[in-house]
Image 1 (spheres, one colour):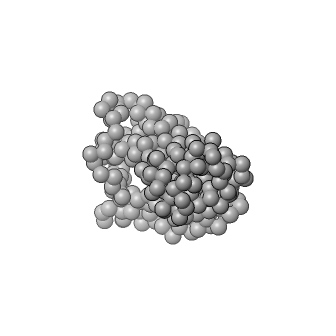
Image 2 (cartoon, rainbow, N blue to C red; image 1 turned 180 degrees about the vertical axis):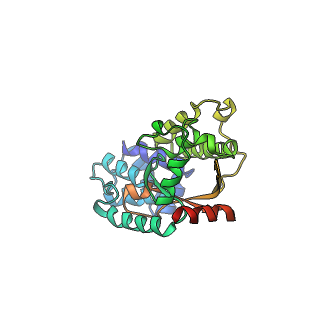
Image 3 (cartoon, rainbow, N blue to C red; image 1 turned 90 degrees about the horizontal axis):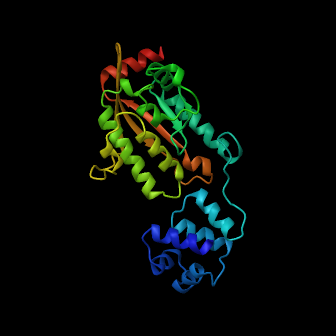
Length: 261
């Protein structure tokens, strides 16, 4: 199984055997032998090649077990094992970002943690609270007419941008079935144009998105930025997504301060 996996990851990164050999400082002959099964890799070689190919930690474990070795990277939940320190950092980030909203999601965009301002927004901008049940998927909230979608002033633009992001994730990470499943769920909601099923790569992937919310006298205009941890040695931490919302105008900043009081 390892030969096929190695070949898959090499090709997915657009590298020849010689390219990989040069980058990993091994011989092209050895790479060829590994891909044909004529040679068996050591544990160190598996990790070296995986790091060179920028393979996610979850899939590095798969490469190790396929080679007959024990998994190397922990998948303990936040708060347990070596992810405990990261949870402590996240809790401090959530607190320090107040009075502005911040949420923490898993790789499938399910809510893990949120600060007080984010909880206020989630509760307030919901059409039918009865439908709001865990596990809460924040992307589905934005597409569901029974949840937040009716209050998003720039929904058509935002939804198209989010779908483009998920399309890219599905193509770049075909081994992660969560993105493909989420994409199908989002496209199944009412009044989604058929043309949106076709990936739109004409628009560049922006580092930030704009979220405009309005309900009664409440009108928020946020700039949304998603960040990740750099090179964590824990699968859970590597897959964590942190979305921070910043006020895009003075009125939003005033309302956030009012909510905090």
